[in-house]
Length: 349
Image (cartoon, rainbow, N blue to C red; front, top):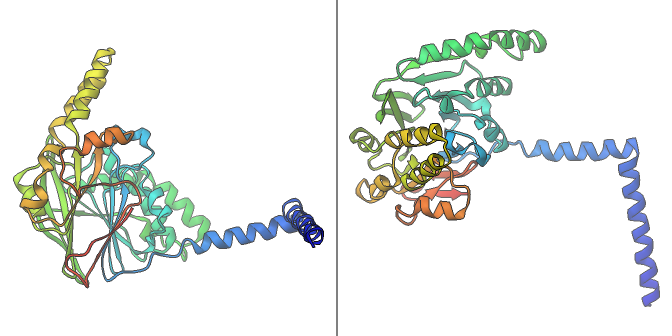
């Protein structure tokens, strides 16, 4: 009996090996495997299930002092029904959006907090990707004073690119007018309202960058605020009070001061100065500690990390002045704020 079982297993092994060899070493087999693999990949690009409420995705958690982390810089996605918006679009953010199967044909606008390069450099990447995906109108770019200069600059820089793509793929697939960005000047207060979604702009303090804004989204009784770059200031506090989810810029003064001292000790005075300069225009972890309790915020999550901790030990130091429950985000983290509950926040990390 045992000999027969061994013979059967040996024959099965030979057949499996022969089938594998046929599939991998013949044109027919390779084409078959390729078709199966692509079918699986295509199925993975199905848009995420729609929720009745707000969906928030971290599409850029890093900062310029974290370029070796592999994380994208400065990007948050907010989805409300069939409308998707981005708050800032730093380097690498378009890659994160595509990797997380965001249906960019639903992208309607980008809200810029200010015009540092780590917040705007991927504007045209998301414009092109959403245009190709079938966005049905021009991408709207919202921002403080200077937004028209930024938008006009991107439109001019990529004018030839748009012409090439329309000539190649045709006006029916890529309407040329939808490839042009459109600018919208932002002032404090209610700046956008459509299909139950309200977006408010509030001033933040990122001097010498002026003006700079944070944004608050309200939809079906749920709310999320995104700080952009700021210190903790009265206008920042007013803009985030009572919000369900706060995504805030965060800087560890302990880490930055120690890194600056180390740079100076090795003769890198330029890097030391740059590091010390950023201390006065990002939110210190020591100043963020009591916001959740005093402002009745349900969840505080950190992004645009200055610096991005390179290991668990540095993460512990970064987080040590913050209350339990504060989250340090990474690219791809998702928050679901359903309308069925005014307290529930589903966190997918």
